[in-house]
Image (cartoon, rainbow, N blue to C red; front, side):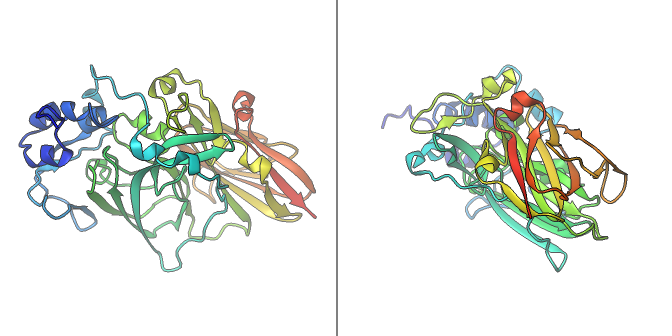
Length: 382
């Protein structure tokens, strides 16, 4: 190899003394690693101290002297650093396309998992790239939490302790932003580079359906490429018994297939005209395999709209919601609702009593988006 080959990331980190030096050297690295040039602008120097026992950074062996800190890349400071720099426009990396032709379609299970019985939830997730088959004929080159779009459904109760660690397996820096947390984002939601981890602990104060997502700049690219999911926080006082399901709506902005996968396209995200709009990461999946309940069941939908651009105008054809919670359940319920909009970055809880048998489409009633995949069937069986 010639001496002009781009430096490895570890070499950059080892010999970097200042933020200015790091960003200057990272520009060479961006020629070799897609999207890293823009994403690395979210990094900044760190003395390594100042975090309390609930907010700690874990650094691999051999990097104990690393003086870098990664500021909250959702901040005005880090967003400003992107001015004059064009972020890479595609999610396509070697890992995001590897094995795309062998990728198998898997229905995303919408059932709400149980909350921890002991009031403590320990999560150790990995940020990684992977090909995800979203339909018979479409595989996407995705950036993910835990190898799926959306990431895992998280369920806890108000006041539970959530202990979270994110380890980055990708060459691109990533982070985690929980909308259910009240925590210093500059410390907890900072970006980490490959093989590094960030850990933090929080106790949700309010019940509801909340988004989580990667907050590394440009945030649009990271959310738009698949790094999001839902955390449901149940109230301490039990809600009425129900069959509970989680619906995460998101938009897909895709380029033409390369190496067997369609990359997410940053410039198309800016255009705000999606190719697909999905419930739980796959267009029309609950048409092919409906959500099934029985007559007399109360159904509770926890709906999170991750966007990144458009709201979810949630509606069930042939039914009405007897209860929609405007704030934290069980407070502020409204009755007899036909449709309610959930904004990007928001979440709401919808309930109905299934007292009529039949097949009831649930849909984004902005039908241009419903017809792009944001539709499913609630099958009520006698």
